Structures are given as structure tokens and as C-alpha cells.
Image (tube, rainbow, N blue to C red; front, side, top):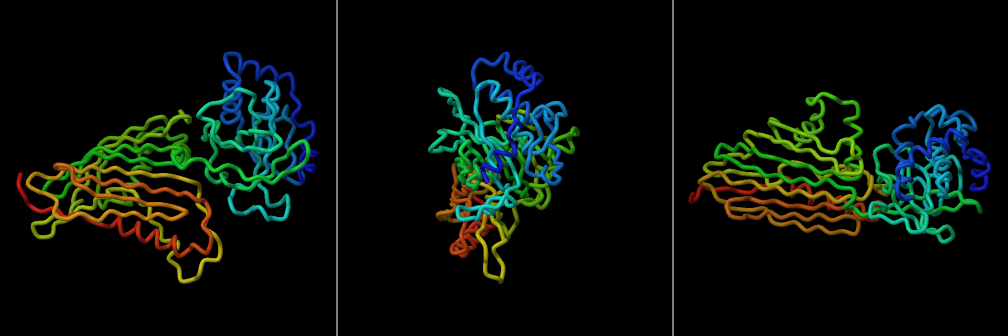
Amino acid sequence: MGNWQAALTRGRRDVSPEIKQKVAALTASAATPLEKMRAIALFAQREIRYVGLELGLGGYQPHPASQIFAHRYGDCKDKATLVSAMLSEIGVESYYVVINSERGVVNSTTPPQIQIFNHVILAIKLPEGVSDPSLVAFLNDTKLGKLLIFDPTDEMTPFGQLRGALQANYALLVTPSGGELVELPQLPATLNSTERIAKLKLDDKGTLSGDIREIRRGDPAVRQRYKLQGVSKNTDRIKPIEESLANSLGTFQITKASIGNLAQTNLPFVYDYSVVAENYAKSAGDLLLVRPRVIGYESQNFMETKEARKYPVEFPGPWRNTDTFEIALPPGYEVDDLPPPVNADYSFASYHSKAEVTGKTLKYTRTFEIKELSVPVSKAEELKTFYRVIGNDERSTAVLKPGAN
């Protein structure tokens, strides 16, 4: 398969004078090889439109790099071909990686069939001495050495990282000596996260108000940037916030909102907003019942079926989400009862939460982490139990009672 793929692409990465000129212009101000590589990668992500026209052999064979560059469009294998050609102009080798964009379709025992692969990306052999903390999507090959995996089709994922669906996924690495089935790296969960930090206050009528910041990294940031592509009205830009709040709050009003790092894909995506939610706390006689988990759901109900699970559960990627909600208590109230802490730790995921009182503030913190991207059928009941534990915690309440001012 590797030899067949290599034969299809022979000569397609030849560099035209126009490509040489463009590479020289892109890298003219770059001081290091890494800066040059980033400039080429960004050009392919931003300036070469994705268009999939795959008829007959065109489903497997890329167009020549000169045509892709001239027309400024192509499909995944075309974009990989152009990037590979441009990288060769600065002395950097790269290799095709043929993959299925859905993890689990291909595994270590899958019989080789070209039809099961539907996407093409690149493995870039880094020059000696090129090192940077932002480069994390590495594959160590016994013959070729350290390879950086890059998807030129993915416009929003920074160079050096890899979206979740491709992580821990099996792929065909096309090398000069043939084809090699490899498993792509799984990145640290901290690179794929949503972090919420809220400073809120509650009044004696049950109204909750305050400021919330959401910091999104990796795939969560990519999803928000894609949602907001082409959106210019501020009222439309906050719709994702409204949708998220509607899942957690009965009534609410967003009083102000802003977005940070929308176009800077190498930085975390940030939402800052202020919210007012009436009747958040429920009255029970002279008591107030308050849910410490203000917004955001981690529980899922897809495991709640009568039929036994037949296939593994494939998570979109590794992630580590954290919430910190601080709620200033209303004057004249104190905490009478708190939900118990939760510590659920499995091989595939973990969930930890804690509600506590600090002075006149109710503080709730939690961490949810996916550690293994594939959960086998043998662990289906464990996964179901895990999500039930999370659901119970998300519904739990603290009890406030009248007390000293």
C-alpha cells in the first residue's frame, strides 16, 4: 500500500518557479527554521481553500503542487502535497500520512485496504536543533526519527498540535521504503480543555449575578472559532454563551460579554461575560437551596440503554475541564449543609469535586479528565456508573439558613 501510494504521488511535489518565489517571500523575515516552517504551514491553512473533488483515481492521487498553488485550492492530499513541496524548498523532509479521520475504524489488526482511509496529513522530519514547547504532536519512528504530525486541512489547530480525532489513531506512514502502520501520539489532556472561573454573589431573593471567564484550549477553542467564522454582529457572537447558559439556568440575562484571541489560534480562546439569573436559589421555608455547580455539564446519558453495548466508546480526544465557582452568600445567611466531595477515578477518566465555605463565600471546584480515548465493552458498566456519579454531583445542592450577619 505504501509503495502504491508513493507511486501515485511521484513527481507531484516538484517545485515550480512560482512556488520557489512564494517560499522565499514567506520566509524572508524568518530568523529560524521553525519560523520558516510555521510561515509555510500558516499559508496552507489560511490561503489554500479546501475543495474536495474526488472522482475515480482523483480520490487517491493528489494534483501537482504547481496546480494547487496556482489555483489556491485543493483537498486534503492536495494541501499536504503543496506543504510538502514548500517544505522541501527550505530543506525539510516530510512524508504522507494516510488516515481515517474517525478513530477506531483502523487498528493494529486491520487488514490493509486503501478504502478505509479517508484523509491525508503530513509527518515532518524536524531539522537538527529545532525544538520548542509548542511542538507536541510527535511520532518517534525507529527509522526516520522524530516526526511532527501536521494536518494542513485543519485551519484552526496551531502548527505543532493535533486535533483529538487524529490522536491515538492508526495511520499509514508512507516512507521511501514502503508503508508502515503507526499509532499517532496522544497529547496531554491539559492542551484540550475548558476552564471556567466565576466570581458571583447571591441575594436573599435567590438572584445570582456576577462575572464568568471561560478559557478554551485545543479542540474546544477550535470549535468556537469555527462557530464564529464570518460572524460580525456582537449579538450573534454571544449565541454560543447563551446556548451554554440555557442548558444550566432557567432564566438569565447576559449584561455584557467579550471575546479574546478569536483570530490568534496559537493562544487560548476566551469568553468574558456577566450574567444575572433570577430565582437561581430556591426557597424552602426560611432556607435557600443553592446548586454549587452553576453552569456546564459533564454527565452524559448515552450509556442509559436497555441493549448491551457492542462496540467500544471512542472519546473525541483527551481533555481536562476545570470549574471554579465562588458564590458570595447573601447577608444574614450561612451554610447549613454542603454536598459531599466526589472522587471517581477510573483508568479511562476521573472526576473530582468539592464544595467548601471560606468566610462568607461558597466555593465549588471540580476537575473532569479523559485519560483513555477508547473504552472497551468490558468497561461499559464502569463508564455508566461514572456518568451517574457525575450526574448526581451536578444536581446536588447546598443549604443556606438564616444566621448571624
